[in-house]
Image 1 (cartoon, each protein chain N blue to C red):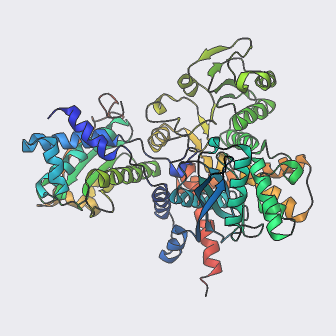
Image 2 (image 1 turned 90 degrees about the vertical axis):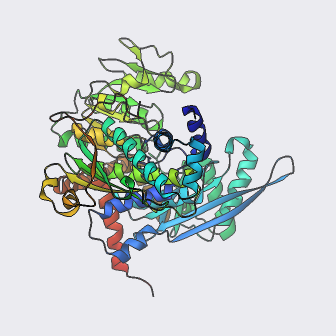
Length: 182
Length: 434
């Protein structure tokens, strides 16, 4: 993009490459295969590999959001990313618990989704890719107990989300230390 | 397999991947939609440019060879008036970038409530490769190619990245030769002698000054003695600094590419301006000024000041430094100085950010004044331009502020909502032809 992009066109700073590297390494560790073999299986649409890859990306996303040190409180993943049923067009189902559902939070998450989706399309050389890689539900802290909307999934037998990250109680958020932003 | 191999494989596949700016514009628009009740049909209209023209621009180089470039002119919306937007010459220009920027101009003109729609144009080229005569031929041929679309009552270009008043003068002249009529209002940002507006040079910086003073007033802060740090001492930053100093503020830090400087007792901006008139490259390096120390560019951003004005490049305030920023108010003189992550962190801290779409709108407002003067054949005194600019900027800030308070949202989102809703209303009122 040409310089002098206005605020509506400023990208998120998400370190796509390191998130993808971490996700691929997770796939390699889980499968015992070298990374080039993992990439080939992703290219071929292998479901198990796509699930692992999405789970790895979700974990990386957690670290990234935690590193922002703001009102992100908990992050959960559910759906095909935690089974073996993801395909190349599957999205990553995520629930994020925030202190307050501010417009800056929503703007950032949209920007992250666009960035990750764009790079995923390029990484996995497939014609059929999801229109949006992340399917994020944002819930304000305290409201997940209401068990309505996305919160209802916390009670589901088959879709119960897995908690990937939770900030320390009472803290302002996680520190930047060890985050992909550094 | 080594981690380095994974990194290599990933970088081979995604290194050159860029986010499509048009998708980003649509994403921003979709965020706005969550806060409005605009109908599906109107939304579809807003998401799509009215016209996209791609042109081939051949020129004869000075050595006699012929080279062909690709140019664009996009009209995103004319619902509120003729399309308005700059022309940029840059190798990175693409159809999607021009479409995105045209859309952004639509919202920008609507936020400050001037009777324009949004447009943008450009040529994918490296202008530094051209001699002046080649640049003139390129400009004139491009003008001829987009001529069916532009006009004082249709679509009005202006300077943008790597284009200037001289290029606008060539566009006016070419259009006049093609039409046989005097058409100064076909572009803005012309030389004064060609119908340019007095005050245009200062307009963006002056707009930043008006916005800053209005925000301070709204926050109950006294402009007299308010400490201000200005990043970037070009056309916008230096003028905003001078005018804020005249309004009583204390400019405690300034910077440009040659360095950043801190003077806790406040810079004598007139003295600094005199220096950069004659300094090598018109840069601040070597500035002789009492009580001043050189600091890092990062340190300038995190000074304990009332107001920070980033007026240099995009993406200066990021996740890395946002938490350390101590300014109570940030006025975005530059385009896109704050990343989405930084926006989030600063919002959490309660920092007031006046977004670029509002803060640096002084330029396009003055373009509007130039156009009004051209079509009326009645030039104004500079004082009139400045007074009217102040009224429009203050009104726009008041409206955005009110919306942000009513809906408990950021000024950035409020500005986008205000702009988008105004365009949506105009589209709704016009109806769909036939």
